Image 1 (cartoon, helix red, strand yellow):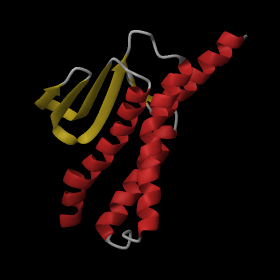
Image 2 (image 1 turned 180 degrees about the vertical axis):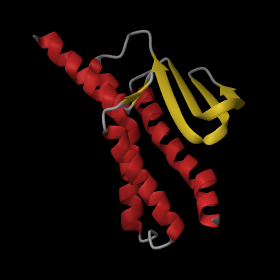
Image 3 (image 1 turned 30 degrees about the horizontal axis):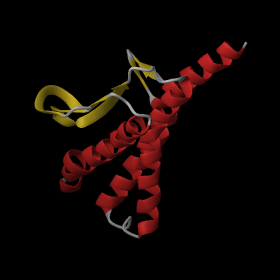
Length: 151
């Protein structure tokens, strides 16, 4: 039970934050004018703004995250794909590093490793829940749009 609580309230949010940092860094690399970084669900408990970045932490900080970015010159489809893949790539890299680090022999680190593998895989699968789209869905949508524009 202790392991689950530590995982849920510490390690899962760390994985989610790292995943979202992947999106934010990708957007920053493409010179986004504004990046909105949001962690969790529920009531806002912390908001920090800078010139380009807004960080929002919600009370249920362990339940997901989201990054959105904007710039004056709209991102082209390939740039949207690049930003969408930033999160899964970071989750994949974290998984590989953990796997080869030799630390995966403890139950907690094994959960951390498996959760990052899950984040990597599940976010590449194209699906939509309400208005929320997976990273894979965004990539597929943009690729389909590029194919249609070429015809």
